[in-house]
Length: 327
Image 1 (tube, rainbow, N blue to C red):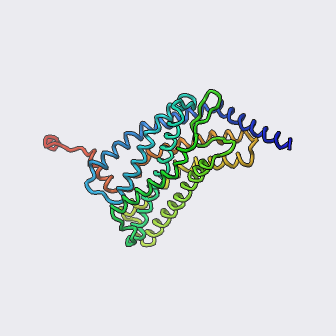
Image 2 (spheres, rainbow, N blue to C red):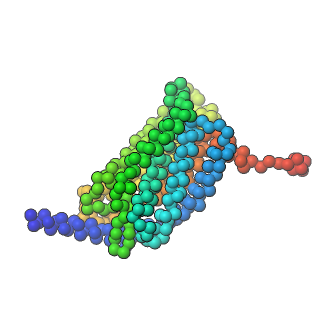
Image 3 (cartoon, helix red, strand yellow):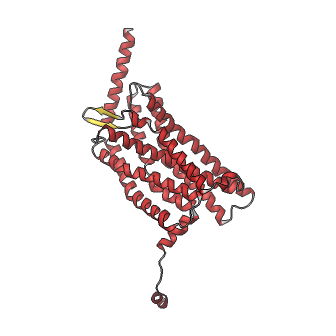
């Protein structure tokens, strides 16, 4: 019995030592995340504002896929409203100074953005898939009202799955530093956070497999019918491939490194060096998820001909009669 207590105490002390070691070696990670987050704000905010202006004032007719893209844009604004607080935190060396309540709200908004972005990217890809491969299917003919109900249901679902972040204490103290994180070395992981971890993993792999399926089926279907040379069809293929590429680049690294971290914590709890390396890599990969809102305008351009035309018209240089005369 005494040996069990000694072993437990050693693991606890090792866990604390690992956390302290991670805190002292995170400076390079903070610099990386500062660069990523500031780049995200510089690129993502103007792009999202421009996209919002086009959606609201330049598109006269909205179709179902346009409405789904608009909801993807709304998810981006959740991220853009949260990123400045993360920049401030990393400038302070990962020290959160805004209190427990705002820590939970900030992490909740970031996680809802991630879930909603994944959900609406997947829906846009599925919409392209059914329009191309099954044009007469009832899903290909859903109305704008049905699209609104579906979008509302998706928002409710992703919000409910992230409620655990509002009911769990996500602010952790390490010496003089307050860490605001969803993934932490808990001695005993709360049930609510286990739900969050499962959702974090499942919401990536299921949509990712769907995206791969859509990409393969659209390409093979069109090649069988020898339609892959048509310009409109090429754009449909490009749209799904762009969504898949953005999805994989932004979300896969954090999921893979997160799973590796959990495996090391479960099977190699005393290997502090490896665990901290993976933890730092995971933190850096989380930064890549923030880039999705900066890359989403590319999805709007490839997924919607209406958005593409409206964008071109907005920046088309109109010549006056005097300029035509000079030419």
